[in-house]
Image (cartoon, rainbow, N blue to C red; front, side, top):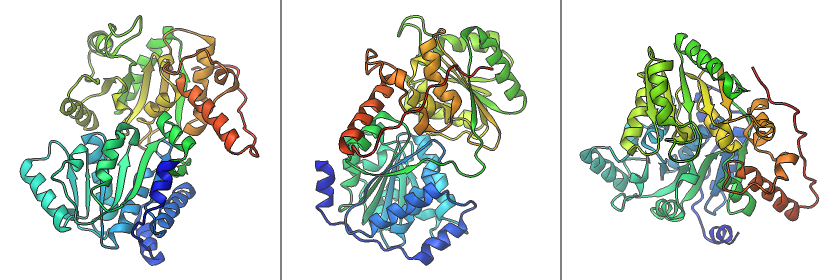
Length: 439
């Protein structure tokens, strides 16, 4: 709360956005914003015209359309003569944002040229980096989108007034402050897909103003989610093969890199060999895990996106929002080792295109309590509902916070906090379902 009061006590530049300008931008979009997107956009518009620096969290469910809101917010500031910066945790995600910003703000339907929006990542050639640094300093570049490279000391802006930080939980406080310090009290928009524990904590403690986007864009198909028994793994493999035969791609996700990390849990590296040689010898498989160097991880993701692999075997490094529209099936091994928040994030990697998509959950072993917990995934695609604590699991205080289910304890703490802040609003709980969905 003190941090919020500090920001509210300083002045920020006012940016008044005319209805005509915003109407023209919205009319140029190839889709209609959801009401949740419209509300978030109006929140940003009011913040920019308040005379105080915006300090807002845009908390949107996976696939709810946060990027377009960030781009329009940046456009509001740029149309008034200032600059914007977007920082993402990985090069491939930064490139994805770069492409989206180009399509939204440049070209025939935009108001910027392609040269006024630039991508700055670690692998950018030095000569190009120098040109970008010069363009930011002389204001010929209006938006830079990148990774940690945008906070390097020699990156200086002429007039940075709008900062966007995506997947904010991936950055430290110092890194976020360093980017913001490159302008004079710039407006800040941090984005995250719900439900990530740190963003829940931000909501609870009120450091940021919150905009919640809990609606999916029109036409987005729900992801069918099923819980399988461990002995039904062959059925999952059959479904994967069927999807690949139709020209689609699949993820197989593991909680660990190798079996030496913990006891008796299936792991990515170990199973990759078996999957490649015995299960899918005729298909092209890729392997991705956290021990790879950043450049190696990006290369694997690029190859998968470009359909050089049929199946990507991975750990949770794929949970950051990279779009692979052709991926239609995800198998999550050891699903009981993940929290619901992480499962929901992972599931959001499929269903990014127009085709129907499926997520299969296989726990390490059958357990009634775990089946009840995983049922939350099988019954809804809404992240806010998925991670809402249920009576049985919320009371399970014996589970430590570092356990995969720790997110539900944090959510319970948040519910207690909200009751203390506003006792006039009774807490609501969903009734637990009686059994897990199976196929």
